[in-house]
Length: 278
Image 1 (cartoon, one colour):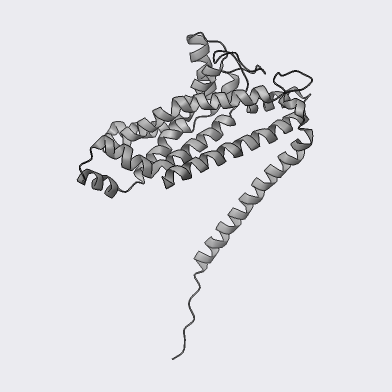
Image 2 (spheres, one colour; image 1 turned 90 degrees about the vertical axis):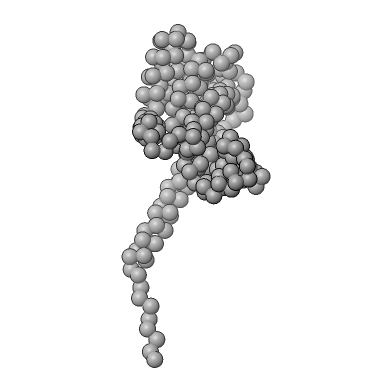
């Protein structure tokens, strides 16, 4: 008997080539951006840029770095518990066929796509004009919390939905209640997906400028309290480049910002793996 040669699936081969080519292009573009920022910024990083106080001589980015960590912490402190709790309600407690639940999901998806400058204008009108606050860290953090809340809700909801129902049924069969099942079985199983959403949120917080210019302000100093104005690294970089006098320093700030984002993502990934193993 003659051996028949296997037929070549040209469609699968074509799709495989397209996928590999897309990955290659993505890696090359990302590598080019990172190398470009490093090449343009690293030669201009000086010890004076990490001075405790900003001046036109040292163009210190240290106050902006402190403000970045402060706003990120406050934003997550507000939005993460609210977003995770909302997702738990939508997945575990709400009626899945309810029109209200569908409306909430459509609304969160819509809010997630709104430009950040719209949130900035809302934060300015509500927190500064209506409430009467000045440009402040807390106004910026609250605005960013509203901005990233839909993202946290949707990613957490998808992570909870990915947990097999057999886990829940097994827990109920052993006599555990709804609340214990959610916190002892469902949440630990979905923790990696939840933290992935928080990591994405951190990236959006750290890189945000438009919403913070309208709410937190652009003062280049470490604020005395959360009700004082302050700029983040992204706003600091924008301000330096916009002035046109410190373009090289803005590239150096971009290097530091990139390193900070990489470190935060690496730390978050490490924590996610620890939770997953636990």
